[in-house]
Length: 134
Image 1 (cartoon, rainbow, N blue to C red):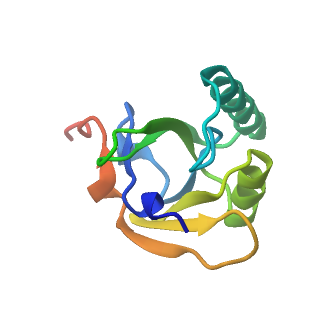
Image 2 (image 1 turned 90 degrees about the vertical axis):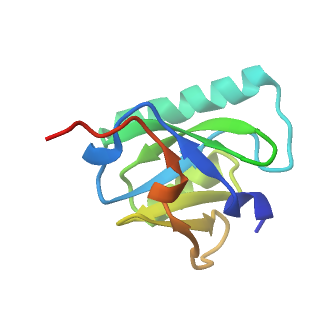
């Protein structure tokens, strides 16, 4: 798996306090190592957003970025199971997706049935607005 997947950090504008305990993060942008025109990335992202919205599941915008290169791409945190997530990732030409289970972050290949690889805690890699005070 590409080393960039293990350095990725995430940004969101929504408070993570209301997020489900388990979800996946999927992007539709150019696969690591490829370059697509901006319009192609935007069209793929719009198709992905439409598919996720049609499922009627929880989603929120998440941007994955490299702290080393600054490269960033929008994606979606979405509450679907691993097999559905892999299928979606393959349809959107992705090498890998992320899984979050109770704050543990995993990366998993979209091809085949390779097991997920633990990356660390999601919360330590997330820039989000502060949670509302009780």
